[in-house]
Amino acid sequence: MIDSAFSIGAMHQICEDYAITGMYPLPYLIICDGCSGSPQTDVGARILAHAAANTLGVLYASPEVNDQVVGYEEFGLETIQRAARATQRLHLHLHCLDATLIVCFVVKDTVIIYMYGDGVVVIKQRELNALLSFETQYDNNRPFYLSYRLNEGRYNEYYSTIVGEENGIKNKQEISNVIGEPLDANVRVAFNEPWQTSMPIEEVEFIAIGSDGITQMTNKAGIFQYTPDEIQQLCAFKVTKGQFVKRRLKRFLETRKRQEITNRDDISLAVLYCQED
Image (cartoon, rainbow, N blue to C red; front, side):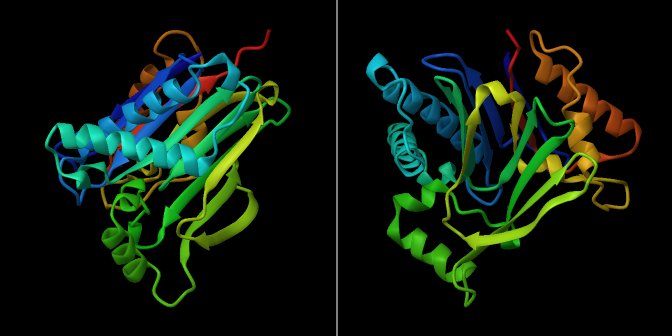
C-alpha cells in the first residue's frame, strides 16, 4: 500500500511542500520541500516531483531495464533537467526549482531511496521492534538543491558561502530508534555527498519519507518539541488501506494542536507499507 499527504505550516501563507505516489512503471514515493526564500517554489516543488515521476516512467518503461538500478547522480541530473525544461516552457524562473527531493522506488525486490537536500527517512524493519529514523540537516538551514547544478554561478556561490574553510562540510545525519537511543553519532559529510540507501523489500514493514517540517513542531513559547516519539506517533498506522497517510497526518496534527503544539513549517509525508504474502 502507498499513500502521501502534505500540510501547510503555521508560518507559511502557501504550502511549499508536495508529495505524490504511484505504481507505474514501478511503485514509488516522492516528496519535495520548496525553499521559502526562492520565488514560486510551491509551483516548483510540484514540477520537480512530477519530473521525478516522469524520469522513473521513462527510465523504467522498458522491461529490459526493470531489473537495473539507475544511479543517484544520473537520476538527479535527468530529473532536474526535465524539471528545468518544463519550467522554461511555463516562463517561470528556474529558482522556483529550489527544493528538496526525496525519492523511494522499488526495483524488482529491492527498495531504493535517494535524497537530494534535507529531510527524514523512517524505516520499520520486520525483524526489529523499533523504527530507524534518519534525519539530514544542513548548516544554517541551507540545503544543496539539485537546481544549483543548472547554473555554474549558483553552484559556485553556494560553495563559497556554505563551505567556508571546513573542507566542504555539509550536514549532520542523526540516526536514532523510536525510544531515542542513538545508534550512531552525528555524521558530517561533504555538502554534495550522495544520500542513498537500499534494502531487500522482504525485510521492510514500511518506509516513510518526509520533509524537515516533521522535526519542527513547537509549543506556544516557540520551543521545539521534536523527539523520536513524534516519529513514532506520526507513523502509528492502525489501518493501511485507502488514504491511510492522509488520515494519520490529519489526526497527528489535530492531536498536537489540542496539546498546543504546532507545525511551524510545511510537512510532506509519503509511505510505502509492505504487506506480507
